[in-house]
Image 1 (cartoon, rainbow, N blue to C red):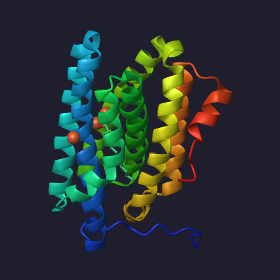
Image 2 (spheres, rainbow, N blue to C red; image 1 turned 90 degrees about the horizontal axis):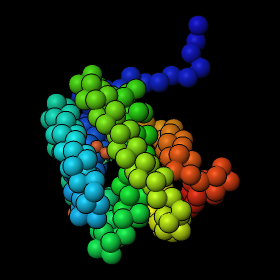
Image 3 (cartoon, rainbow, N blue to C red; image 1 turned 180 degrees about the vertical axis):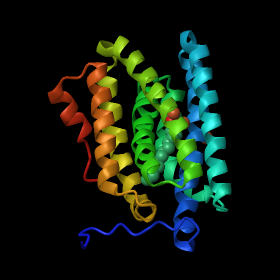
Image 4 (cartoon, rainbow, N blue to C red; image 1 turned 45 degrees about the vertical axis):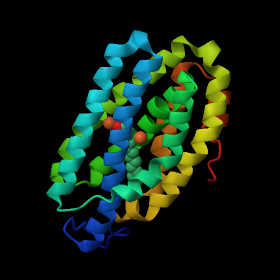
Length: 230
Ligand code: Y39
Ligand code: FE
Ligand code: FE
Ligand code: FE
């Protein structure tokens, strides 16, 4: 019987795949590196959570090493310059918020937005990764749920006093996520990761996180759709 939809076999060794991988792999390595630094930075703002934050930052370092191994396994050199530019707007916003002592904004950027982005991308990547990378990514994504949970728990406990800052930080940072996704759409598709699926998975995670923190359904619909047109 003829198949209606043909998903072409992925050739992990092809130049086309490896070229796209050099950017996606770099993004993930850079993201893990910045996540490591971000959780360390947060120890300065949340002294009561010091040990937990150090533990999270060490997990991010391990993730980075795992993904570096994925690149080496495919004989791909990650394009770190591209990845630094990819993360620069979010990175700058995090740094600025940290310098101003805005812990709520820092948590929204790292523990909600970036972690939800990571979970969405990793869950989808697991379905289409090479065997080596799939095993690594399965281990990593479990950790990312716990990082998201750290942010949710803290923000839930401080919900009333954080609400206004969360809304403002969401307004400033969520549109950046859509731009980031647009800029890697073609490379992601080469790895068989569709943009629509990434957007949907992100929205599910992020909406659920906002709901867990204490936003009403009405509020979270408004918040999570912010700037979706990019
Ligand atoms: O907390 C973390 O470990 C997050 C840093 C990692 C972010 C990974 C970002 C993945 C985006 C991949 C985009 C593929 C389409
Ligand atoms: Fe930095
Ligand atoms: Fe990580
Ligand atoms: Fe993480």
